[in-house]
Image 1 (cartoon, helix red, strand yellow):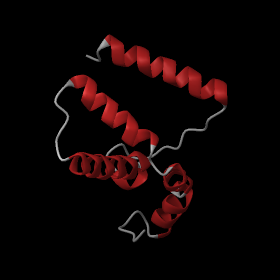
Image 2 (tube, one colour):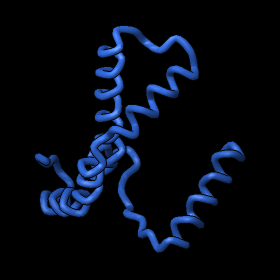
Image 3 (cartoon, one colour):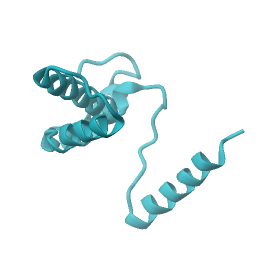
Length: 105
């Protein structure tokens, strides 16, 4: 059974996507190569660890943790993140060209 909060979120997200005219790109849910968020998440984690290292201590409270995470998030190189997203059609075409087999990005 799907929790109501997730179902409501999915319905809201779907309506919002359609209202904005955003096209959905079908892809296997288990394929990290077709999910730009995987690259974004790696970039965020790397920068977060670097920020903790520069401070020479880990956050000691929820407020401090969220504050540092927001600071790191706002400083992400957004042109690079949008580059990950913009590269998806090329990645899919490359995958199709190889018959769904492994590719080198």
